[in-house]
Length: 158
Image 1: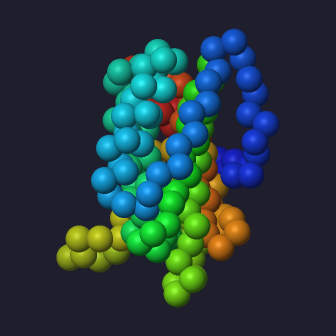
Image 2: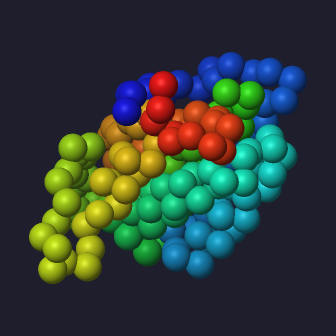
């Protein structure tokens, strides 16, 4: 797993590169719009079908975390999806919740097996090829990069 600069806005542009940016209400109902936009971005860049689920699952975890842990009920989250020849970068930024300071821990361990919650960061860390987590304004920004693979090998294989 690598670490990427979550603040980078100068992603390399190629003829086939494309960026979608959404600002949505911090509500679980917004997840459907984010997923739909991400699916369109993956289709547009001819993402291998066998690798779509890891991107979708990690994205869903990041968005749900931003909504549940990093936002007030009237807040918004911003999702940026950059698709290029080498892969997809997904950046999810929340505004924060003034009553709850953000806990930034990329190395969070799995909760006890009896717990039904607390695995989001672990899932994102395992699925993304590179990940960064940082404070951004009063909130949190998570950036994940997913390298394009041919669909026949493990996403972490060299």
